[in-house]
Image (cartoon, rainbow, N blue to C red):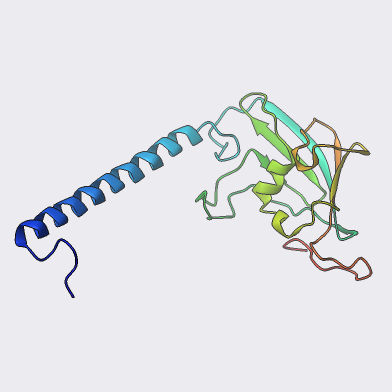
Length: 182
């Protein structure tokens, strides 16, 4: 079978030249995009390591987590580069939001004041929000339900109670889902 543009030697050269130029343009756009995103991500507190940064802005909150009506522990050492996923973090990377113990205390550090949300911590933790039914789930801040759900801003010293229900959970059952390490 003959492919279009490959029968005549002159047309074949033109077609191959066009494909090579197209390949070069694609590689240049890809590399440029990666460099620009890397440069812009250096100041994003959700994507960088903080061990070599001066972080005078500090706060801590308490998170109580309930999944399908059962209390679940918030594991220790969240935010310490234990994942080599899309962010390709090294194992010695400390993130801006982290836990040291499993008592639910979440620590936040950054160079300046930043509008951290409870959802940011859940994202760093890789909590499976896609498996949760958002219409039944809720976030309480100091005992009052937040209209912002996971976008509730963090406030130093506050207590956050996150109540999540798995999609399709039958409340008569004990548990359909618990987060990792529980």
